[in-house]
Image 1 (cartoon, rainbow, N blue to C red):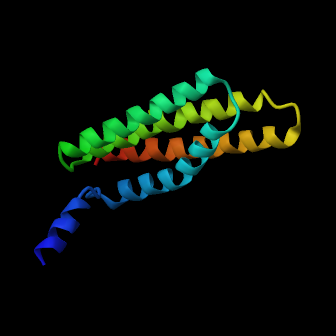
Image 2 (tube, rainbow, N blue to C red):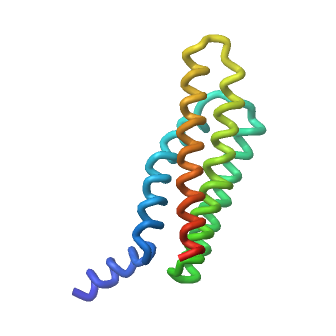
Length: 134
């Protein structure tokens, strides 16, 4: 029974306000697949490097913040860093990569990736903003 309690304590990072958690989960479920697809195809090395650096910074901030505890300010940092450092540079990389294709189909795919990453960005921003004002 003690091992189960320790296991469940490992997952004690869930936000105390469900709306913040739901917003971030939706943002991550929507944004991460498009972020990975965007980084894996096309575009310039400069925008890809910026998107990778932003993603790494967002992960570092999330891990570091969660080590400080579980309060709404921590989730504010995670939401905002996810939006501004992870998803927004990837969205920029996607739209910049669309200009490198001469045929319409790959360009439309990159534009769609850009739109979905922008929606994920707004959702993460909303969750981060909501966390600070609860």
